[in-house]
Image 1: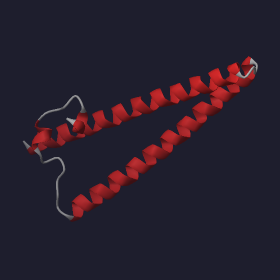
Image 2: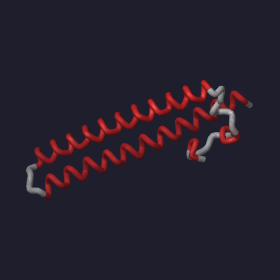
Image 3: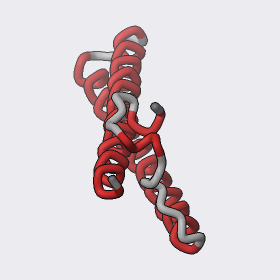
Length: 105
């Protein structure tokens, strides 16, 4: 039961990460489209609009990278605290199965 919970916990965390990445990719795509539309609406040529879209994608990617680093740092800190408290986050009823919404059950 403990091994299954641990595996399910990992799967649920992976679902959380996948949902977060998908949400960020939608946001980046939206930002890029918005930047391109704004540049075109301002009367700029297609090359300038494409450059603006590229810049927006780069900004969105940098933002996502910063978010991922912050999340990793927070997760590492949480894991450290749980280790010090001898707490196993996988040992809960939530992890008796793999949930479609990850740990958000």
